Each structure stands twice: as structure tokens, then as C-alpha cells.
Length: 93
Image (cartoon, rainbow, N blue to C red):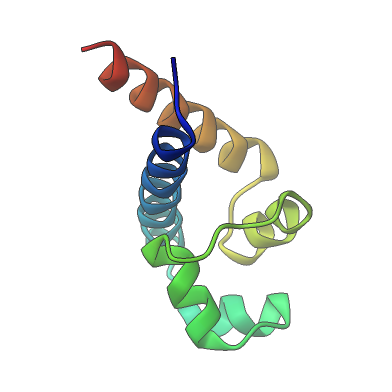
């Protein structure tokens, strides 16, 4: 049975992995953190926190963040689902 601690740890790992994936997508499209921050109405340190996994994206922010890093919402959701599958596979091993 999954405990609150287990869920918290899984969420932290999800945020970390997603942040890394977001940074990779952004960099692949030649977009700087400052540009993402400007597009989103964020300060650049907040983008850094998202990419380091210290701050999760709110579901309502996902479409705008996808646009800001030069991908579609579908591509970003696919990345989220891939990470979820990786975490599920790791928990079974």
C-alpha cells in the first residue's frame, strides 16, 4: 500500500524528471529561460525552479508553457505520460 510519504517522493521525482525534460525541449528549440519567463509572465528564477523540479507546473499552465518552449501541448503531455510510465516500471522492479 502506498503511503503519503511514498506519494510525496514519487511526486518529487516526477517534478524532477519533468523539469529535466522541459529544459531539454526548451534548449533543443533554442529558447532561453528568459524568453519562457517573458512569455509566461514569470520571473526567470521561477522557470529555473520548474526546470529543477522544485516547483510543479499547474495543469492550467501546461499549454502556455508548451508554447513557450516551442512544443505542442500534446508533445508535453506525451512527455508527462512517458515519465509516468518510467516511474511505474521502476516501482515494479
